[in-house]
Image 1: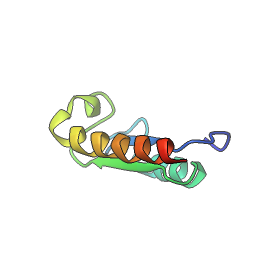
Image 2 (image 1 turned 90 degrees about the vertical axis):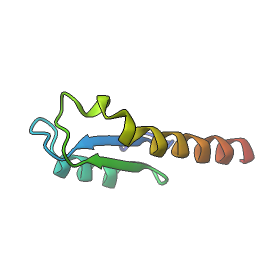
Image 3 (image 1 turned 90 degrees about the horizontal axis):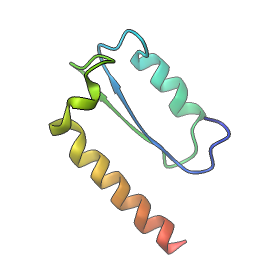
Image 4 (image 1 turned 120 degrees about the horizontal axis):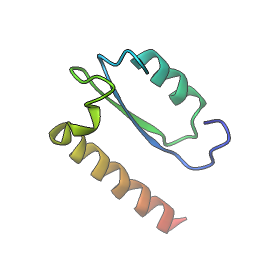
Length: 73
């Protein structure tokens, strides 16, 4: 994560026992500026990607912000 130059959007599950929210916090601290995260409280490691209703808007907004920022730089 420390080698990345561009921000990332990290998504995790509140009930993830493989990569718990505490691990996500460590990644965020090491990530480049502009990195965002989202924790789906009821999701675990195996289903977090299927919570489309929870992740669609934040992911779309983040990409919209980043694409505008990158285009303007």
